[in-house]
Amino acid sequence: MRNPLSFAVSEAARVWLLAAAVVATTPAVHALQPDAASPAATMSRLDAPVFAAGEGGHPFYRIPAATRLAGGAHRGRILAFAEGRGTLADNGANDIVLRTSDDLGATWSPVRTICDIAGRSLNNPCVAEVRDGRHAGRVILMFQSYPEGCGEGCVAEGYESTGEKDTICRTLVMHSDDGGATWSAPREVTREVKRAVGATSVATGPGVGIQLANGAHAGRVVMPFNEGPYDRWRVYAAFSDDGGDSWRIGAVAPNPPKGLGNEVQMFERADGAVVLNARQHLGAKRRTAAVSTDGGATWSQLADVPELPDPQCMGGVLGLGGGTVVFTGCDSESRRALGTVWISRDDGRRWPEKVLIEPEGFAYSVPVDLGRVADGRHEIGVLYEGAGYRRIDFVRVRLPAAPPTAPQPSDGI
Image 1 (cartoon, helix red, strand yellow):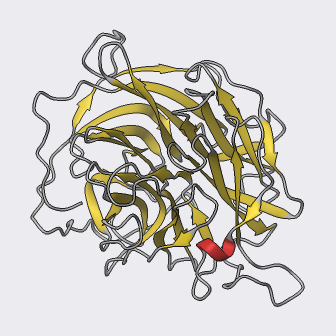
Image 2 (cartoon, rainbow, N blue to C red; image 1 turned 135 degrees about the vertical axis):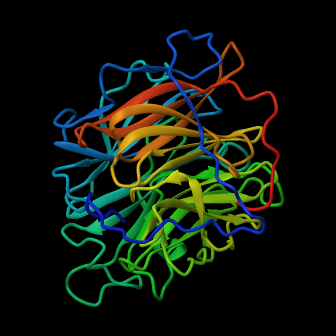
């Protein structure tokens, strides 16, 4: 679901249409402070990348996915995934690779290929931990398998090829019950997560899926998806109520009159509603969002998020509890640069704060919950593409202290 790096988008930024009028405010920018006890944001960065071009058996690495395990014998372990590529092209002899860290990203295990299928391009890793219920402690990894050399523009709808060459974009799932040490064989779930008619390509995330903790659908595992054809994308969720054994497909989120949802991530609000946040194509240079009140089965119409710019690049979103949500992306309408963490204190309705973490190149990114630290503030990690796609880095960010009075929830996203 990725386009060339330069875009010509002539559409002026549209007003975010909500039930109540929204007045956009300029976010408060937090400078990074060297004093860890400061109430402002602090940051620590590794000298070595997690994935570096030419190291670990692959010329290039792209498309990060990551999670920190919340339970089980390997609680606290970070699992970082990527596509191990032969070239920078999206569709080639791509493998799915993994590194793990048991010390909050200070050191990492060697690069390990966990899935390599001859003649297929493996794309869009998306990871979710089953934290409660059936298969608690299991890590689910979902991704696509394209025919090598046949990308979004050449795959067909349906489930079976009609000619000699396989032209179906297939979705595979693997799982680990031991913190990523071993993995099941890939299992195809295409018929469970792709529409039989109208959908050609599909893509999980990329990034993370979630397990719902609140409301009528608590325990449900939700994977974010978008579907082609190219330039006619739509976003939706596939979900499982049995810990990933089986999957069902939800309805697409209605696109607005102008603009299409593309690569997508989701988080859960305290009231059990699910919010999607997507890259936007052919619309405003802003992220687009929608809400589901039935566990991802149906969605409100997509609407622009005025505080979050979008140069047509994947972005990450993560709910931290207590109404705090973070978004990681580019603070630019035109460049994959200026990597920034935005902070919402009201379940993603407003984004009044932001922290610059990477002034240079910054593309796909995934935030990781590292928990609360001694001073009571929340710490996250951000796994992101930098340096012209030559490396995938990991940075730890201690978020600024919440303001004394958090913004009050309002109508809308």
